[in-house]
Image 1 (cartoon, rainbow, N blue to C red):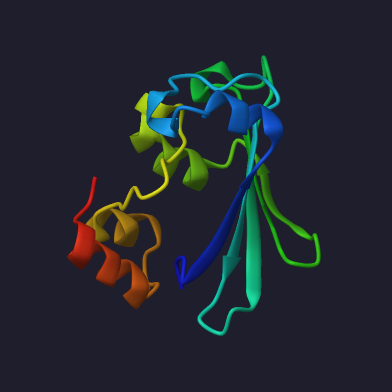
Image 2: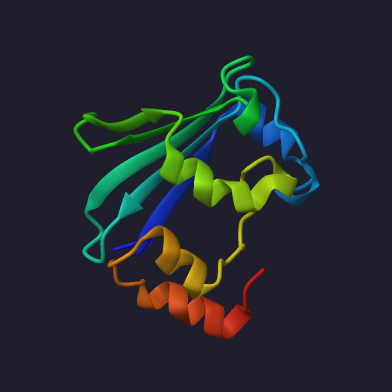
Length: 132
């Protein structure tokens, strides 16, 4: 299930850079870290995903190191993770980060998470707010 519930976190470097809103940031500084805890419908932690800005790591992808972990810390993916980069590339204007409240169209979510049901909460958010 894609994003039934999530908790998004950022370190002080990323928070300071986005103090006037993520939509106003075109490049995050080195050391910026975003972490997303992903829960299922029963509010059980399923995965933790992260993005860390490391200068010189991968200039084509704006030097973000992508990672995904199981709740026990087991690494699912790390580094230049194509599925992460492909999805985040549509947020190029905000340095591959999705501003809070940004809802992707259902067709886009289905493309990146084939065969997974879309959260009814996400569908309701789109119906209520539309998408960016």
